[in-house]
Length: 392
Image 1: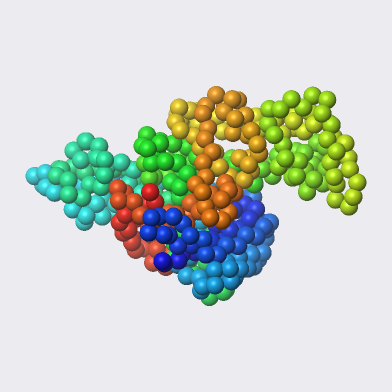
Image 2 (image 1 turned 90 degrees about the vertical axis):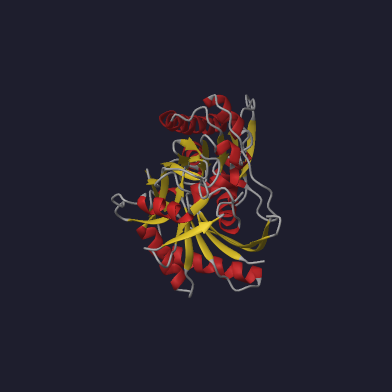
């Protein structure tokens, strides 16, 4: 079994996974490491030297845990460091000829004939929906007879400075990234079933410092919107509203259960260093649910702009999805169905690690119906065609 390593860089923690895939497709975890760090805010790392140190420590721990030398490293790129472009493309053939793979390659190359975004580097491209002579195709177009083949193509780019920081961190320990993959895409493919993406689906990932709203259509990322609100803001509201230490506020947040009747309920909260304080639970409820409603209003506003209020919506991330009753609260408040789904994993089976496992699944497994293009981390101008790429 070939092993692969994923480096998942979140806003408050970095995860390293070393895994392989069983013949039936199940992911086998050979090594794992997790470390918290200062993270990033508004696309800026708070301590760039720390980032380099933590990446080195993560990979060393994952290698020790797996008892194998790490290789084939893929870096998961979080939403704030991505840029997406959608471009149309078409290929015309004489006399309704058979579409060959070289025709698809040409269509993908032609789809890049626009001004590339400054400060970003292309990491992967995905055809959204092939049509042959105006008729939608259910699978890859190679072998189909047509005069005109068309498809819009999703191009995903990584922030050049983010990539440089990670490349330098890996180079400092004698390693290099084989691929950079957009987490909103890989996580969306991992969590949202194929059939629910046929006409568009939405993934809401509430992390520590921000929330990503990602629109996926078939196996392509159409758009990723970042809201600068996450689990940290829930915690900080408790800190300032109730004059608590951050560690105490975080524990209260994790224990909170939405929509219970907290009238006249008093909680004795243990504080670091000894002792307890009494807090009216209705005050905790007011603070947390006010922030939740604010986030829900922001999310619903973006869904309305995207015209996706009727689409399947999935919730993930450690910022809120682990708080009991949060999904039901958001459903009721926004008036839309919301699902939380995390495929079972042999280790770290939690929405906290969905982004890491999503990137791992993206790299380990293949999909017959879809043709994906990855752009090599080492040959930036060369398109590497990968058939049967996306995870099913």
